[in-house]
Image (cartoon, rainbow, N blue to C red; front, side, top):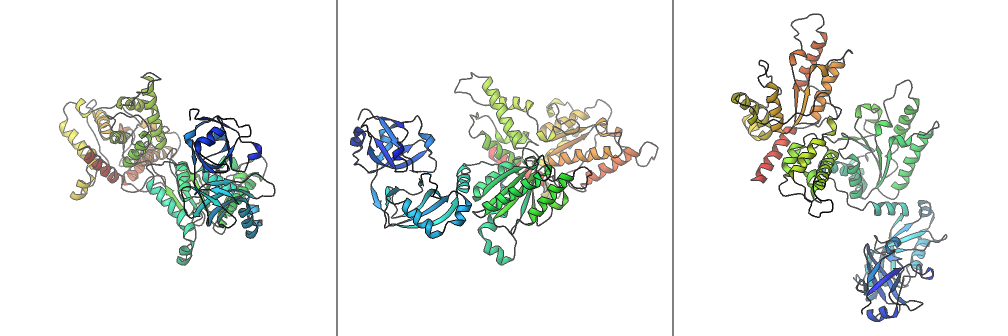
Length: 620
């Protein structure tokens, strides 16, 4: 047949819900199809199953399809303006089905509660009578005020066939699942793959909290365990908490209901509490269908610490959320996840078992995690073979996921501007990433105290001082690169190094060379950065410097001209009080006394060394 192209037209209103496909006589003849024979029409978004019928005007070259039986990805809007090939129409053999199992989608939860099972069974039998179906196809029901059903998904058929199956009055239809349209639509929309890299341990922890209690309730009851009410995610901005929650919800098949703190507040008194109650009521309604996650982003803006004189509305919101969290466990399959980067600003009453049962800390990505993130970001980019992702991961200490995304985007833009804009041969090379490094700095250091970047200096640029350079390498580089050797010899890496000498003997240059060769975070602090006219402010600033360094390890804290910062406690003179207090704070920080909750715990240097050893082996 020469005229193989068929232009798609909207279906006739008389054919809606009849599963009919109207084609011209020449197409019917080419297919060898009799009237009413089942056809499979292949579309860009999927397939639909229909029956062959001639057009009323007997015109060839046109196709009118009723997509009432189709795969999940096909919608009526996908058919506009399409031109199909006759090869995309396939005549199918069919068999009478003995059994079929279906999932029924109803309009609302109220109809689900009020519709008796016997009535629903009869309705489904009537709707599916003499309908051709295939496995995993969805049969859409025409809108009707009296009909509570939106669509029917075919879960299994007997006998199993790749062709079409005809549901007759003798077919036994079993309703396996009944869900509401909102639940079904949400799960269909969230079925797209969400890629998350570098957060495997946190993702596993979240799955344990959410998935296990919902799928094994009898085991939890036998062990006397209660279902967790809530999880608090703590991490710096841009680390990927929202993306992580979406990925976990998709993998466990949970309904995700996202809200942000400022959206809850209203203009009139009591409106915020009412909005919060409405959110939890919606979550309880969805939890009757299956696992439900209520995700509160930026929870610190919603629940600040109580006790201030002018924050009565916030206090009422906090009290309302505490009451709602206490009732979550009894409501069913619902868990509350909150995310914040300021855990100290939260009201302490929230952070106890029974409300937020577990606090999951997401620190700045380690070397191995940064490498995984870079692999994910560059997998769809035309990256040159000379780009070493291991080397890039080493150079991005302190970068979070958002920073790495911006870095790759900036490198791609640089490569695009230095080639013809319409060229298909654009390749991103190492030089593009080097240029991107000049523009994209770690977001965690944008509000840091002191200087956070230095001009790169190599060891070869420093003449002489071979013994000093060797000592610095042994003290700083070797513990990072060879932690197993240090552990085997029973050696610990030094916490601090004091460089002293006359002016101009390259003390600062040596520190820059160490920071360049180690590819670690760098913080340079002077006396002007530390001292403040307010009592206690200098000590607080120094603690904040060490907190930022610990959160972005491996890091080097460089205290330049330390004699101007610290005093001697042996000479108690007037005016030395601030220096003595700063010295006490420095001694405590060097001893490692106390950690903030936002700082990553564990032997991070050991992790970095393992990754370094692994990358060396791969290079070999």
